[in-house]
Length: 363
Image (cartoon, rainbow, N blue to C red; front, side, top):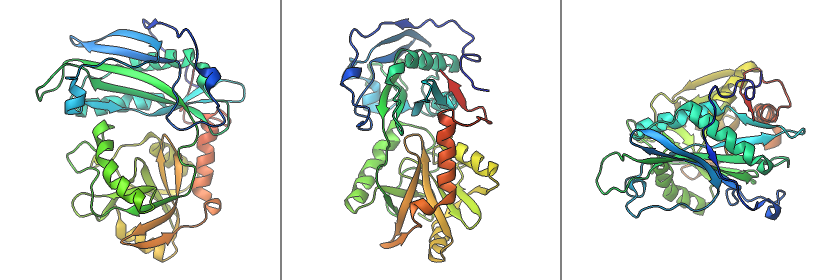
């Protein structure tokens, strides 16, 4: 079953629509798209005031006006999601597990003491916006329409407390691949992305700000991403850059669990684990020590290592460096598991194979 038209919304949309007077589409080269630099014609906005979401509107994409005292600027109440729309050869548009994004943005919002967005509102806004900007979904192989829903505190406020007013917005951007070269990473042993009891499991803007400095230092050393480790001892692996991470060691696909709430519970992560089980692969989600990964590399038992996330889907890692010792991984084209699962996910997203898990939502 494909969700969407048949299962869509049980409400009549009350979103006001103001269409753009002139599309930017003629100026877009879909064969040469820079990730996150071009934006579609429209955006969705809603205001949270007096305990409810109001002023639901789709309007032309444009700058927004904020007070210098905007609470999000000063106190960091801001959360977001990332998802994509895909187009098949017949021109149909699909979303991949969007209800999970709707659930997760509310988990993030609750942790940041922000109002949640009803799933019906989230899905209706998403559907109406994508319908209006349907021509922005690239038909080019390897490309998609990136979707950015987000909530931030909009109240004029200088005082450390949860704001009373918020904005919920969605805009979109046609994108190509996130990683276009080999990914060399190092295991981080000094800086920390998140700690137990913190907000690591929330998709909060501040999490990404905190990661920029160590990532910049790593980039200067030639590393595309970092493998984050635990804050207490730096002995256990948590995630890689902005992605969950997986290791294919022996006959097992191994990934750090999310029970400690220091990492984001990735939707792509969950999908990969489900597909691996479908293929008969043994899966373990638990604490993963740096030592066991290093030992597996030294013994030639590490067959594959890759990140999972919305932007890249599966990002295969070419080398891992630990304490200045570099380990080269098997060539990308020889890796059976990540290549197979990566292809299955792409085929599901574009409606090329049967969606046995009911993940696809048709616009």
